[in-house]
Image 1 (cartoon, rainbow, N blue to C red):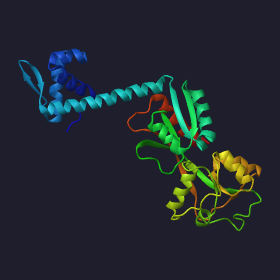
Image 2 (tube, rainbow, N blue to C red; image 1 turned 60 degrees about the vertical axis):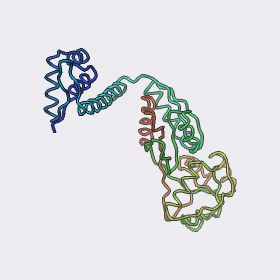
Image 3 (cartoon, helix red, strand yellow; image 1 turned 90 degrees about the horizontal axis):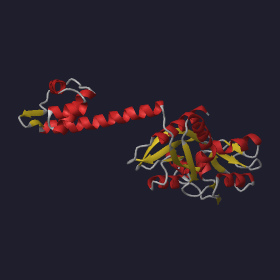
Image 4 (cartoon, rainbow, N blue to C red; image 1 turned 120 degrees about the horizontal axis):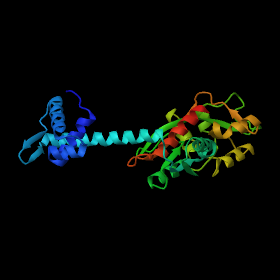
Length: 300
């Protein structure tokens, strides 16, 4: 089969809608003779009989109805493509409502927002919450876009990978945990940790990664704290060790407030993911913010 171009598809769709060659010529802005020639060429190229020519007009066959409907879908997609590429050339400012899990909101999103302010006129409204709450906000249409740090992204949401993040085990400098050269993942899983609440991306990622490495059971927390800053403070005070993002503890490690403990048989790496509703296409401003997040995360 020989392919036909968009102009031929426009003629097919216009003739099907108008029911006549003359009417289609008015729609596409050309002469009836040009429409007739284009239509005959399309039928030859496709090897299909699309229209019956009658004294009452030009009527689509059953095959013609199907082909015209498919052509309309392609033309709609082509129009969206043209619109979006035009927006990239001369983007119109927009507002993006974003929900991000706490590690992302505290350690990555500020840089994304600065980059957005410097490169576009878009306005970003950011709310910080845990990963479960982010997904709920996206489903409820409370936000346009979410960012989560969970290894398991709900299947009912569309998603794209933005970056990857490593989880590390940390303890107070005076802690005896892991002083004999580190812990295996099984030993770590059996250690009561200071953690965030259930629904936290960091906590659920650690549990999922343990299960993925064949460690089925994770010890009950020694303490549950509502914020990452609270977890870090509890660890520094000697309450217990914690598994946290490298983004959250790099300053504490550099200043000696916390000590990193090696996990001897596994690296705990999780995805950082943008999510949105499957039944809604990302708006131009939201799509730009996702690309900014991906590019900025790659450069850090």
